[in-house]
Image (tube, rainbow, N blue to C red; front, top):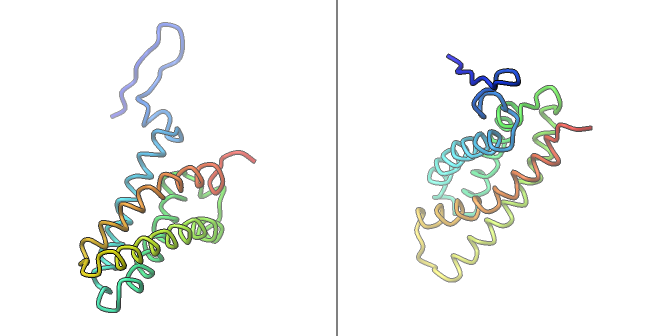
Amino acid sequence: MIVQFHDAVGPPTYPPLRGRAGGVFAQLTRFTLVGTSSNVLYALAFFTLDMYGSFVANLVGVVTSSMLANELHRRLTFRAVDRVRWFVAQWEGGTLALIGLAVSSLALALLHMLFPGADGPAQVALVIAVSAVVGGLRFLALRGWVYASGP
């Protein structure tokens, strides 16, 4: 059921998430939900592959979760299926993910250097914290560059 709010002067308006599905707040909300689900995939991949080393686990986790996130952002977050082809979304979104991979790999290297006994949960927590910061910057880049609605 859609609730409508009526102005005395203009046409009916809707709650922000329904009427302005492309607005910044709605996009940021969907971006956060997609990021959370892709972080769950990342953590599963990391814990599954940690026996091969944290750098391999990080690489596979970042690649798989980024591919999922790029497609969900194309379809859901920015609703750009009609504007951005799959390969373009993967290529450009993947480039941004590679920057995130470099930053998270550097953070892992520092963690190993400063705290050699750090376990899997500490490593995942660090990478997710770094990803949250990088994610904010990624949102701005995706919104303004990859999935921009203008020409």
